[in-house]
Length: 170
Image (tube, rainbow, N blue to C red; front, side):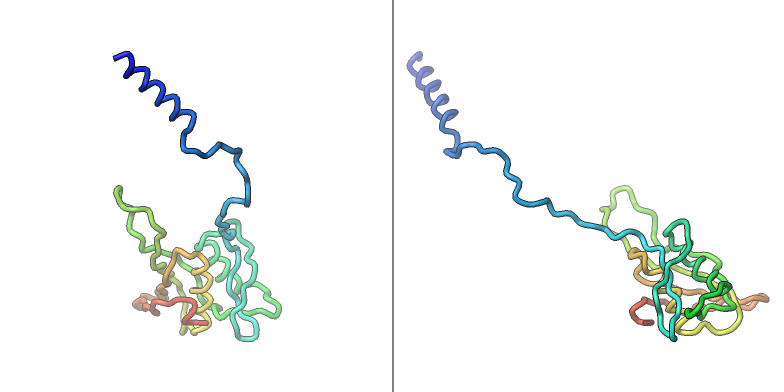
């Protein structure tokens, strides 16, 4: 029995010394680890220059879609120089997000949704006006599409202008 124990101890010592046959080395840094850089939130809005959409800086405190849309509609009352807006006569009312609350056991994945923008005003909303709204809102990548609801004054029924993506309106 003692011989067996001695043999087992010898084998164990031999395995500990030999290990896997590769001698340990220090850690070598060969390159920096991969890092995903998320661009900073946009504080820009889409205005018009020579009849085409152009990104312009917005004077807003936060980068929320609501504050950007407020700045976009407020721009119609400001001197814009060589830029213009197709949203004169319209006001921004509010937004609604179609995301449902996250369920407790739901897998956390990047989520997309439809953003509903409610605007008020008389007249017809032009294609360029829709593009300004949709492209400004879709700077937030969470919104797959933007639905525009046109609220008319004087108790006329609201009109759904449609669901849009920026690329289709440019």
